[in-house]
Image (cartoon, rainbow, N blue to C red; front, side, top):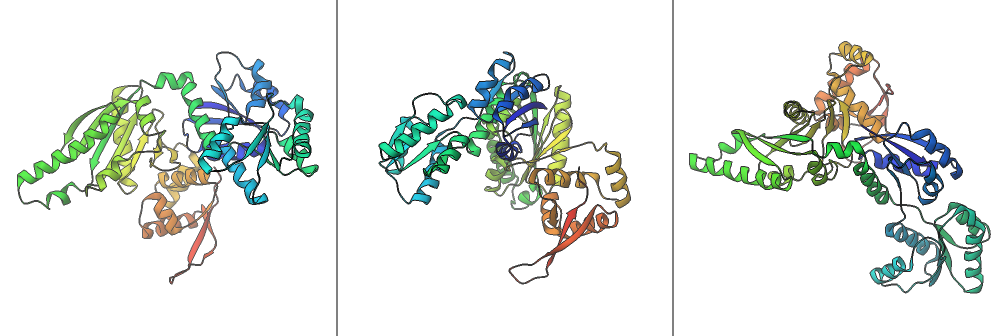
Length: 433
């Protein structure tokens, strides 16, 4: 795990936490304060604990810069064009239309691009100096003068304190804040900048592709020639994808293939475990596959972990891709907005004792706890549990009955459906870990 220190006000941390779910390699430490001058103090406290630092914006980064060691990567979330488009949309909803605007954050280039892409004709008056808390009064005066003397219709600012002051004196304005896309891009840069990341770039990765419905496909053909052509078509499709991973492919048996690549390439091509099109591409050819990816400090360990990951994918219901990392933690299914992360080995004595009482696999409980932690929702129906665990609804009801007896969950309500059917009971997880 890569420890990342997050420094900023509480409002940014809530948004960063949502984006952080997409980066299972990060172990975040949050230092939150609505007093921006706490940033240098937080920096001093984090430098011995963290592999990389992330600031909510340029100003907390700039006032902390002298405290950051040269060998410690540090990043801040920039305000990009997407932030301008969102602020522009909010202003337009509030004012219906405007022609002239004062801005203290973005350049004329961004406004010109907005005018071109949206076919607008906004005139912008820009504060030329760099944003600084020491110049707050000067920035407020700039917007106020522009509003009164140059007839601007509204203002855009990158400082919350300026937005609040302008609102107080009756000047329409919008505070420009980073979008979640800006946060995700910055997190990706932070990940790539760490020493651990650089060392992992060349780590060997093994993948096993298992054809789930090979027997069903073979029964569709009456001749051995057609079956051999099927194998060739399947192998070609898998080979095409492995080439994008800059990897090497070999056939293990009639229904399994193994590929080898490097971790850096795998994570770039899958966009940090969020994009794995091979499964859906093969499905279009009526071929159902499950994929296991293994990371390890040796080739033997990576191969063993790939087999474990494949078992997880098949147990989930198939047609998914799972990863088992070198610490034997599981990530999956990938190709989701935020995959689950849970340990392959359950060592928590309380969890083991509870699952022993219920005679239900501890992995099911650990998966649900991981899902709750990621989504910040501790209630679910049997149908939602079935989808999360990759089991039938009937099996989910059996699991829930056992968990009810062990006081792991409780019934907290009834979910009424729009269509005909029995109301669904809503369960709440009582464990908090």
